[in-house]
Length: 565
Image (cartoon, rainbow, N blue to C red; front, side):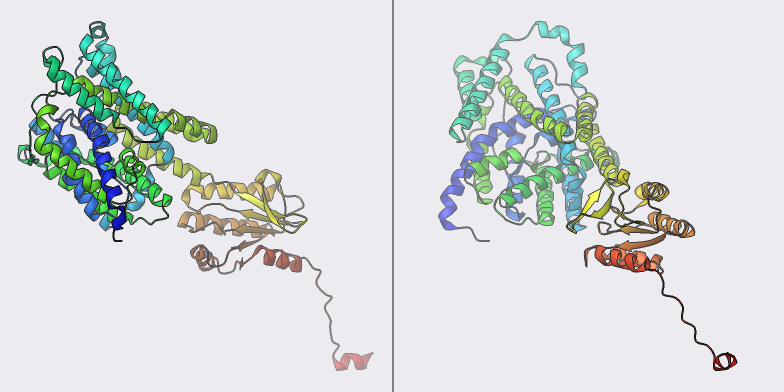
């Protein structure tokens, strides 16, 4: 859709706002990822531009992200020294692998994988990531080496060193934290975005230059100016690095699919717009390949930065393109001052990023509404904190699948009856409620497959055994069933045979026309002698007719017999 010319000034302003608010954030993400500070700016150049040009979403902003940065640091820890050229080359190789996998996912239609990470598990996962990031930032503020895998163990084993912190580091970090928190408070009060993090960084650079702080606390150091350069030549091109990075690439793809798709859908829904997920996956793939080829790391759809643009009035990808131009100007003319930035400032920014990811409100909401799912979210958080981010995301996917299987394994099946007004409503299976004396209507509320076939058989056997009055008909409502696999089909055949031996007639009903017709055809092909009614009303009518006494048989005497009388 063409851009409304009247909106161009607003889009430009939104792009400048995004750049001023996001630049400090992406620089902070490099502390999480273990890459040079300049690579954070690189994520907002070629990768962001590629996504803006080829995506379908008008709102999604793509750049560095805390979750994928944390997975990156966890996976590369044992392969190369953080911050070195080989480490950065492996990060680029990983970005290319992720990009290729996203392109394949788009090509063969694997967008549904975005739903494999449930909202519940995603809340728990990001909360665990937030705790890891915050603890990692604390270790750096105290001058300890950033932990590679186990933050808690590092804090415990190095606890003696916490007695001798660098006062200058803590003062600078504390001032930055207070300034950013105050800015957030003002944002809530005024409803306007305030680039307080950028102001804090500019102020810290000015103070570092004026007071020559590099003599008393660590600073970023030399930052290269100009456009990014490829670093893949540092990789020793063997199959082993690719093999070692495959699980990490898969984990990142799952996170990117879930987070980017959810964010794009949410903002499209706000404006009643559609989203072409297949096109967006391809654009994300191109963006990550661009990241790998331009010396930076994996990029992802960012909910935080998307909200920055949206709050500033941006309603198209022109805002992201403008932000790319601003970043280009920074890379060409302003990298020298970045070298004076104290490390403590970035650690403070990272600490606040981690705190923002810890979603206590979301966890409590899950606990109130779905206690069982809360336990899974809590378990996911614990796994991420104790074992690491990469292990956490893989286990999170498994837990999401278990959660889905649990719902399908034990569906909320019910009995259907009519009230005095003639309306149908559901009753608990324990009630044994009959739709008519001798007629049970058993509503199965899920796809019939191998995992729940045994439950179905058990429930039906219990219902027929304890039925009162004595059961004559059992009607199985398959309106909600969209498929019946081989195991469930065999179970139904066995049940029908067993019940008919006990003089219980089994019929089926599909109460909504043209819905789940596949399941009806499967029943008719597998059990051609069983009737599939098209409405509950017809079931009641047929049952009532079957219970009518048969008329007396009328015999006609043969003429010879009548003659004999």
